[in-house]
Image 1 (cartoon, helix red, strand yellow):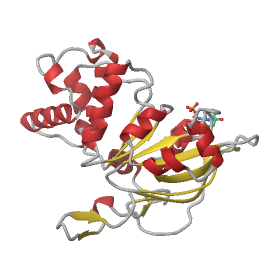
Image 2 (cartoon, rainbow, N blue to C red):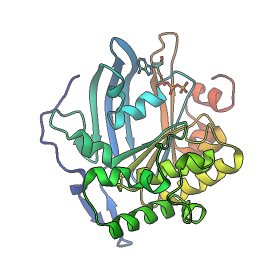
Image 3 (cartoon, rainbow, N blue to C red):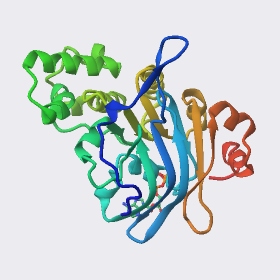
Length: 283
Ligand SMILES: Nc1ncnc2c1ncn2[C@@H]1O[C@H](COP(=O)(O)OP(=O)(O)OP(=O)(O)O)[C@@H](O)[C@H]1O
């Protein structure tokens, strides 16, 4: 793994803000500033020279054909890709100004701030309440009342509270697929992340459950930065502010082709391969 710049690992919550004319505090820096990222599992290069600045408090959709490295890209953003084996990383990934590949980065703290929701809902084999409280208890020992408050807040935040409030001690495995996915979102929210990475979170869900997750994403973006991988072009156009199109060629190495406001990417993409992909001509 290569680390470009030696610098202290700071707490990302210390990033600077400035008041705007509307007197609203706006972050000055991207949520993720990725420069020249090249990523390999062992010697298998999957991404090359990806440069992208992901805006804060927006939804960014990552689209592209199967195998172009979309999941790998988001798993490189919270360094969970390396849990799957040896990886090689070149380039720079800054999270609110911190180089996350610096050797002194606290990975637990990093991953707490960058939550992740996967394709298949993966609730733990425990009660609904224990699922949401799980990460909170790992971080400290809140009082019972505080924990109850956090669990309720996270379940409300994930638009699940009304459906489960009378069954908090029942097994999470008894929930429907869509409810399980919202429970996983609640579990991620409970530790107050700054970012939510979502890897095709609706691909295992029916249209109604998908609609609920999309509504949830739209409400969460007021407070959170969301990066979502999706194969569903309509979903990307409905819920995202910005879209990044990745693709690969005969080398099987993924590259970022184009990134910009979703409306522009969908209406007048600059690159022919982006237009071909969006219009369903390949992928
Ligand atoms: N843990 C891993 N070890 C080795 N190779 C991997 C690993 N995970 C993914 N790959 C390889 O990396 C490449 C990109 O995979 P990735 O899942 O990131 O693509 P993707 O665009 O998300 O694909 P899909 O849309 O099909 O989910 C593929 O060739 C895949 O086989």
